[in-house]
Image (cartoon, rainbow, N blue to C red; front, side):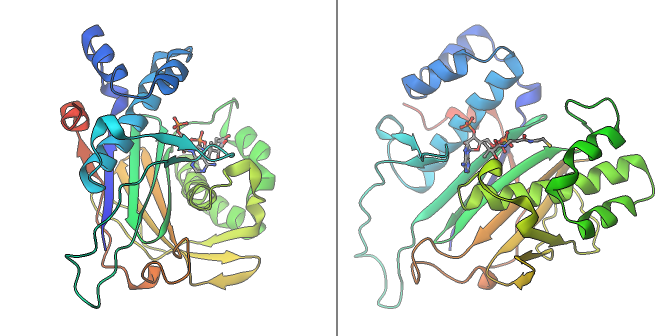
Length: 277
Ligand SMILES: CC(C)(COP(=O)(O)OP(=O)(O)OC[C@H]1O[C@@H](n2cnc3c(N)ncnc32)[C@H](O)[C@@H]1OP(=O)(O)O)[C@@H](O)C(=O)NCCC(=O)NCCS
């Protein structure tokens, strides 16, 4: 029951021109063109890192040569592998089954991350917990975001002692919601975020350790089909991974039977491209 959690620190990645060209030659032409249209180098680097993470993952874990990987997007923008390799099940025992991989990437703040899971739906979201995009203050930011969280979630956020902790609590909820919306593939704006409510576990998040104790309520009912992994990449970056039932019934394990979660492994640029021809 395979599982992958990788992170790349794209914020401190300062590629030389030749390194950037090297990377650009290793993604599909339409992605290279899309990345080339970003106005800010920061956004281009994050998007490039996301593509390289996916390709490295497919090459290593799905055993498809780099040059044969063809990534496409669903109508709502979720990338998927259009040409998964044929899997030979001859080596499997009578009670073993092959479960297809799901994967998803996220990039925000200093990091790009990839989460992949065999046999189960997966969505990931990384959030920099110290920013208030588009707003001049935390209270103004919370006002703009009011309708996306439930009354209970806001009361948990507002019960934190300091502004910094309130912002971190907000992003903890936000990343959980977004990881779910990304796992089911709708993205944020195709889904009423009030339908999911998170009941955070009281345990504080820590670097280098993932926990899976927060619970989701869907349409006011406690949901046991989905599990959520949470961890900190560093003091300012929170990641949530949503793991849900198999895409097709019976085509994977139960999310509740997973082995204990592992933290994200930090990859270097050389790691990202080492399997590229
Ligand atoms: C696109 C969306 C799925 C995620 O957007 P995001 O939070 O900006 O971005 P993330 O870094 O978490 O994820 C982006 C990656 O998710 C993947 N993705 C795109 N659409 C997706 C979808 N419908 N479902 C799952 N994954 C998707 C892509 O790989 C994308 O990266 P790429 O386009 O460079 O390949 C969508 O939910 C959205 O539009 N969000 C808006 C975010 C926002 O306004 N946030 C407010 C700040 S608090």
